[in-house]
Length: 326
Image 1: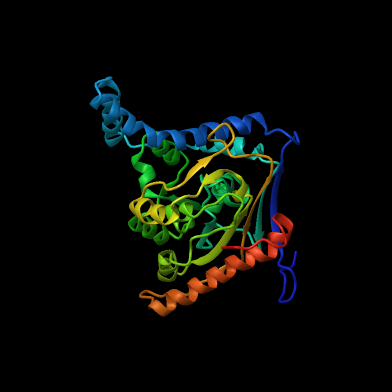
Image 2: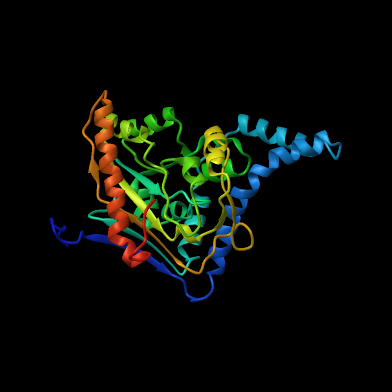
């Protein structure tokens, strides 16, 4: 298929999964997401609960068990586990939502393309990012894609293990540069916890205008930037949006998860809608060892422009014609 030329609609590659029962999520997919998001939500409660149990005199055993866990992981760090990756990929592809699709402008990601994909919006639990990880177009081992998340998650028991088993790594600068030096493709969520803080159910909101570090790295290593937007993320959870400035400054600013949300049965996302991740065209950055502020501003602007283009060109099909991106 020939690539689209200027003035024509871009060529798109589409991977789509539809569930067998129109009104019900696939039970295997349901169990997969329940285990994943249950651990994601429940894990941060473990350390403070263990400490509280010890200091209130209830029992010292939970705190001792937690200390034992950290000692064990210090001696025997968790490693990538292919069996777990394949199990989660199989569960997620069974289709929890009405439909799940990944749409890519122009071309797929080749293993040596040195591509950095930024996912938007963060949402409450990054459902679109998670499902994209399980797709063949983005999550297959043949894509050579390295998925990076907030370093805080690797200090929390259980979720740290699950992420490591799935070959997910920390987005700390040292690791970011290490991955780029190998020429691996990268997937991140620019804005991190700040992006989660502005998430509001039913709205299309991103936190990217003040996030430019990833663009600087892309210039230093000659990567191509590809903005991605997930339509449907806005419908995954209900949110309590009080005290947004406080949550942005004092919670997200101190690496504390800043979003209060409620889903189906508590932790599961609502499933009565479609999820579509659209990945925009590559924005090739030149190789610049010491990029100037102007260099970063230029390619950050191109990235934001590309993100808006992805949203505007697809909102009629996957959202509503009058939808706006904040």
